[in-house]
Image (cartoon, rainbow, N blue to C red; front, side, top):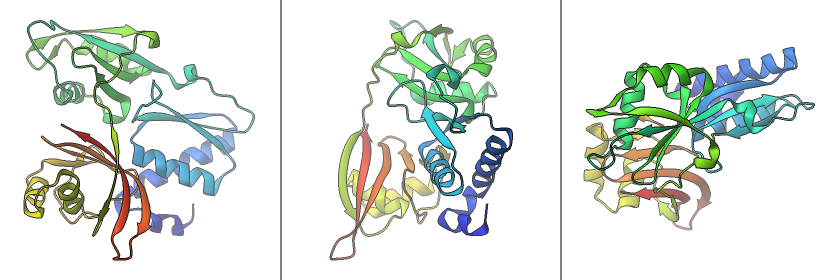
Length: 260
Protein backbone atom coordinates (compact mmCIF):
# COMPACT_ATOMS: atom_id res chain seq x y z
CA UNK A 1 0.00 0.00 0.00
CA UNK A 2 1.55 3.34 -0.91
CA UNK A 3 2.70 5.91 1.65
CA UNK A 4 -0.08 8.35 0.70
CA UNK A 5 -2.64 6.07 2.30
CA UNK A 6 -1.37 6.94 5.78
CA UNK A 7 -1.99 10.68 5.46
CA UNK A 8 -5.77 10.21 5.51
CA UNK A 9 -5.64 8.53 8.94
CA UNK A 10 -4.05 9.03 12.35
CA UNK A 11 -0.44 8.06 13.05
CA UNK A 12 -1.61 5.58 15.70
CA UNK A 13 -3.82 3.86 13.09
CA UNK A 14 -0.78 2.82 11.01
CA UNK A 15 -0.41 -0.69 12.49
CA UNK A 16 -4.07 -1.39 11.71
CA UNK A 17 -3.66 -0.06 8.14
CA UNK A 18 -0.67 -2.39 7.70
CA UNK A 19 -2.71 -5.32 9.00
CA UNK A 20 -5.53 -4.58 6.51
CA UNK A 21 -2.95 -4.38 3.74
CA UNK A 22 -1.67 -7.85 4.69
CA UNK A 23 -5.22 -9.28 4.74
CA UNK A 24 -5.98 -7.91 1.27
CA UNK A 25 -2.72 -9.32 -0.07
CA UNK A 26 -3.47 -12.72 1.47
CA UNK A 27 -6.97 -12.91 -0.08
CA UNK A 28 -5.58 -11.87 -3.47
CA UNK A 29 -2.68 -14.30 -3.43
CA UNK A 30 -4.57 -17.30 -2.00
CA UNK A 31 -7.86 -16.47 -3.72
CA UNK A 32 -9.66 -17.49 -0.54
CA UNK A 33 -11.73 -15.51 2.00
CA UNK A 34 -10.21 -14.04 5.17
CA UNK A 35 -12.17 -13.49 8.41
CA UNK A 36 -11.04 -10.76 10.81
CA UNK A 37 -11.55 -10.62 14.57
CA UNK A 38 -14.13 -8.13 15.90
CA UNK A 39 -13.53 -4.56 14.71
CA UNK A 40 -14.83 -1.34 16.20
CA UNK A 41 -16.75 1.06 13.87
CA UNK A 42 -13.67 3.21 13.19
CA UNK A 43 -11.60 0.16 12.21
CA UNK A 44 -14.45 -1.11 10.03
CA UNK A 45 -14.52 2.29 8.28
CA UNK A 46 -10.75 2.19 7.63
CA UNK A 47 -10.99 -1.37 6.30
CA UNK A 48 -13.83 -0.38 3.98
CA UNK A 49 -11.96 2.64 2.58
CA UNK A 50 -8.74 0.68 2.01
CA UNK A 51 -10.49 -2.30 0.41
CA UNK A 52 -12.47 -0.13 -2.02
CA UNK A 53 -9.46 1.98 -3.00
CA UNK A 54 -6.81 -0.72 -3.28
CA UNK A 55 -8.50 -3.87 -4.53
CA UNK A 56 -11.41 -5.43 -6.41
CA UNK A 57 -12.21 -7.63 -3.43
CA UNK A 58 -15.56 -7.67 -1.68
CA UNK A 59 -16.26 -7.46 2.03
CA UNK A 60 -19.13 -8.02 4.42
CA UNK A 61 -19.56 -7.14 8.11
CA UNK A 62 -21.53 -9.11 10.70
CA UNK A 63 -21.50 -8.92 14.49
CA UNK A 64 -24.07 -11.56 15.41
CA UNK A 65 -27.18 -9.41 15.00
CA UNK A 66 -28.38 -6.64 12.70
CA UNK A 67 -27.46 -3.51 14.69
CA UNK A 68 -24.16 -4.82 16.05
CA UNK A 69 -21.60 -2.13 16.75
CA UNK A 70 -18.54 -4.40 16.78
CA UNK A 71 -18.39 -6.75 13.78
CA UNK A 72 -16.16 -9.31 12.19
CA UNK A 73 -15.37 -8.69 8.54
CA UNK A 74 -15.14 -11.25 5.77
CA UNK A 75 -12.88 -10.11 2.89
CA UNK A 76 -13.41 -12.31 -0.14
CA UNK A 77 -12.90 -12.70 -3.91
CA UNK A 78 -15.70 -12.18 -6.46
CA UNK A 79 -16.70 -15.86 -6.70
CA UNK A 80 -17.37 -16.34 -2.99
CA UNK A 81 -20.84 -15.99 -1.37
CA UNK A 82 -20.50 -15.60 2.41
CA UNK A 83 -23.26 -16.72 4.77
CA UNK A 84 -23.86 -15.67 8.40
CA UNK A 85 -22.45 -19.03 9.55
CA UNK A 86 -19.11 -18.24 7.94
CA UNK A 87 -18.57 -15.50 10.53
CA UNK A 88 -18.04 -18.09 13.30
CA UNK A 89 -19.85 -16.02 15.94
CA UNK A 90 -21.64 -17.55 18.87
CA UNK A 91 -23.89 -15.89 21.40
CA UNK A 92 -23.65 -16.71 25.08
CA UNK A 93 -25.98 -15.65 27.85
CA UNK A 94 -24.69 -14.92 31.34
CA UNK A 95 -26.91 -16.76 33.81
CA UNK A 96 -26.90 -15.23 37.30
CA UNK A 97 -29.28 -14.82 40.27
CA UNK A 98 -31.28 -11.85 38.91
CA UNK A 99 -33.46 -11.49 42.00
CA UNK A 100 -30.51 -10.69 44.24
CA UNK A 101 -28.05 -8.74 42.17
CA UNK A 102 -27.37 -6.68 39.06
CA UNK A 103 -24.65 -6.83 36.44
CA UNK A 104 -23.24 -3.89 34.50
CA UNK A 105 -21.59 -3.48 31.12
CA UNK A 106 -18.34 -2.41 32.79
CA UNK A 107 -18.28 -5.44 35.08
CA UNK A 108 -18.96 -7.90 32.26
CA UNK A 109 -16.32 -6.25 30.05
CA UNK A 110 -13.79 -6.20 32.90
CA UNK A 111 -14.39 -9.89 33.64
CA UNK A 112 -13.83 -10.91 30.01
CA UNK A 113 -10.66 -8.81 29.76
CA UNK A 114 -9.24 -10.11 33.02
CA UNK A 115 -9.81 -13.69 31.83
CA UNK A 116 -7.17 -12.89 29.23
CA UNK A 117 -9.56 -12.14 26.35
CA UNK A 118 -8.26 -9.53 23.93
CA UNK A 119 -10.96 -6.97 23.07
CA UNK A 120 -11.10 -8.09 19.45
CA UNK A 121 -12.07 -11.68 20.38
CA UNK A 122 -15.58 -10.67 21.41
CA UNK A 123 -18.22 -8.36 20.04
CA UNK A 124 -21.10 -6.47 21.63
CA UNK A 125 -22.27 -6.99 25.19
CA UNK A 126 -26.03 -6.40 25.25
CA UNK A 127 -28.68 -6.26 27.96
CA UNK A 128 -32.42 -5.64 28.25
CA UNK A 129 -31.88 -4.50 31.85
CA UNK A 130 -31.94 -8.00 33.32
CA UNK A 131 -30.55 -10.53 30.87
CA UNK A 132 -27.02 -10.20 29.50
CA UNK A 133 -25.64 -11.64 26.27
CA UNK A 134 -22.19 -11.51 24.66
CA UNK A 135 -21.09 -12.27 21.10
CA UNK A 136 -17.85 -14.28 20.85
CA UNK A 137 -15.55 -15.62 18.18
CA UNK A 138 -16.36 -19.34 18.11
CA UNK A 139 -12.73 -20.34 18.60
CA UNK A 140 -12.64 -18.65 22.03
CA UNK A 141 -16.00 -19.89 23.35
CA UNK A 142 -14.83 -23.06 25.08
CA UNK A 143 -12.03 -21.24 26.83
CA UNK A 144 -14.36 -18.49 28.04
CA UNK A 145 -17.12 -20.84 29.17
CA UNK A 146 -14.62 -22.79 31.29
CA UNK A 147 -12.78 -19.73 32.64
CA UNK A 148 -15.59 -17.48 33.80
CA UNK A 149 -17.54 -18.46 36.90
CA UNK A 150 -17.89 -15.02 38.49
CA UNK A 151 -18.62 -11.48 37.38
CA UNK A 152 -17.37 -9.30 40.23
CA UNK A 153 -18.62 -11.15 43.31
CA UNK A 154 -21.58 -12.68 41.52
CA UNK A 155 -21.48 -16.39 40.64
CA UNK A 156 -22.47 -16.91 37.01
CA UNK A 157 -22.50 -19.58 34.36
CA UNK A 158 -22.33 -19.03 30.64
CA UNK A 159 -24.75 -20.71 28.30
CA UNK A 160 -24.62 -20.83 24.52
CA UNK A 161 -27.87 -19.63 22.93
CA UNK A 162 -29.21 -19.65 19.40
CA UNK A 163 -29.84 -16.37 17.57
CA UNK A 164 -33.58 -16.84 17.92
CA UNK A 165 -33.17 -16.08 21.63
CA UNK A 166 -31.46 -12.73 21.21
CA UNK A 167 -32.80 -10.03 23.54
CA UNK A 168 -33.73 -6.52 22.45
CA UNK A 169 -31.01 -4.26 23.89
CA UNK A 170 -32.32 -1.58 26.21
CA UNK A 171 -29.75 1.02 25.19
CA UNK A 172 -30.73 2.53 21.90
CA UNK A 173 -28.86 5.29 20.11
CA UNK A 174 -30.69 8.52 19.39
CA UNK A 175 -29.67 10.33 16.23
CA UNK A 176 -28.85 14.00 16.85
CA UNK A 177 -27.51 16.83 14.71
CA UNK A 178 -25.39 19.63 16.10
CA UNK A 179 -22.76 22.20 15.16
CA UNK A 180 -19.40 22.51 16.91
CA UNK A 181 -16.49 24.94 16.74
CA UNK A 182 -14.00 22.06 16.48
CA UNK A 183 -13.70 18.25 16.57
CA UNK A 184 -11.71 18.38 19.81
CA UNK A 185 -12.76 15.72 22.31
CA UNK A 186 -13.57 18.25 25.08
CA UNK A 187 -15.63 20.43 22.70
CA UNK A 188 -17.76 17.50 21.51
CA UNK A 189 -18.42 16.27 25.06
CA UNK A 190 -19.34 19.72 26.35
CA UNK A 191 -21.65 20.39 23.36
CA UNK A 192 -23.50 17.05 23.48
CA UNK A 193 -23.97 16.86 27.24
CA UNK A 194 -24.40 20.61 27.71
CA UNK A 195 -21.66 20.98 30.33
CA UNK A 196 -18.88 23.57 30.57
CA UNK A 197 -15.66 23.17 28.59
CA UNK A 198 -13.80 23.19 31.90
CA UNK A 199 -15.85 20.26 33.19
CA UNK A 200 -15.49 18.25 29.98
CA UNK A 201 -11.73 18.92 29.94
CA UNK A 202 -11.52 17.69 33.51
CA UNK A 203 -13.48 14.49 32.68
CA UNK A 204 -11.04 13.72 29.86
CA UNK A 205 -7.87 14.56 31.79
CA UNK A 206 -8.88 12.40 34.75
CA UNK A 207 -9.30 9.33 32.52
CA UNK A 208 -13.12 9.25 32.42
CA UNK A 209 -13.33 9.26 28.60
CA UNK A 210 -12.55 6.51 26.10
CA UNK A 211 -12.18 6.86 22.35
CA UNK A 212 -12.77 3.59 20.52
CA UNK A 213 -12.54 1.64 23.77
CA UNK A 214 -9.16 3.06 24.88
CA UNK A 215 -8.81 5.65 27.65
CA UNK A 216 -7.82 8.98 26.11
CA UNK A 217 -6.65 11.80 28.42
CA UNK A 218 -5.96 14.39 25.70
CA UNK A 219 -8.72 17.01 25.72
CA UNK A 220 -7.40 18.44 22.41
CA UNK A 221 -7.59 15.02 20.68
CA UNK A 222 -9.32 15.44 17.31
CA UNK A 223 -12.22 13.08 16.66
CA UNK A 224 -12.98 11.68 13.23
CA UNK A 225 -15.65 9.79 11.33
CA UNK A 226 -17.16 6.77 13.16
CA UNK A 227 -15.19 7.28 16.36
CA UNK A 228 -17.07 6.12 19.45
CA UNK A 229 -16.55 8.11 22.65
CA UNK A 230 -17.73 6.84 26.01
CA UNK A 231 -17.79 9.13 29.05
CA UNK A 232 -18.20 7.54 32.44
CA UNK A 233 -21.47 8.61 34.02
CA UNK A 234 -22.76 10.37 30.88
CA UNK A 235 -23.07 7.84 28.07
CA UNK A 236 -21.66 7.51 24.58
CA UNK A 237 -21.29 9.49 21.38
CA UNK A 238 -20.60 8.27 17.85
CA UNK A 239 -19.54 10.59 15.03
CA UNK A 240 -21.81 9.33 12.23
CA UNK A 241 -21.28 12.01 9.59
CA UNK A 242 -19.29 15.23 9.15
CA UNK A 243 -21.55 17.34 6.97
CA UNK A 244 -19.56 20.42 6.03
CA UNK A 245 -19.57 23.89 7.59
CA UNK A 246 -22.04 26.62 8.43
CA UNK A 247 -21.62 30.25 7.29
CA UNK A 248 -19.95 30.96 10.62
CA UNK A 249 -17.42 28.18 9.99
CA UNK A 250 -18.91 25.80 12.52
CA UNK A 251 -18.73 22.10 11.71
CA UNK A 252 -22.05 20.29 11.12
CA UNK A 253 -22.21 16.83 12.66
CA UNK A 254 -24.63 13.96 12.71
CA UNK A 255 -24.20 11.94 15.89
CA UNK A 256 -25.46 8.83 17.57
CA UNK A 257 -25.95 9.58 21.27
CA UNK A 258 -26.62 7.32 24.25
CA UNK A 259 -27.55 9.22 27.38
CA UNK A 260 -27.21 7.58 30.77
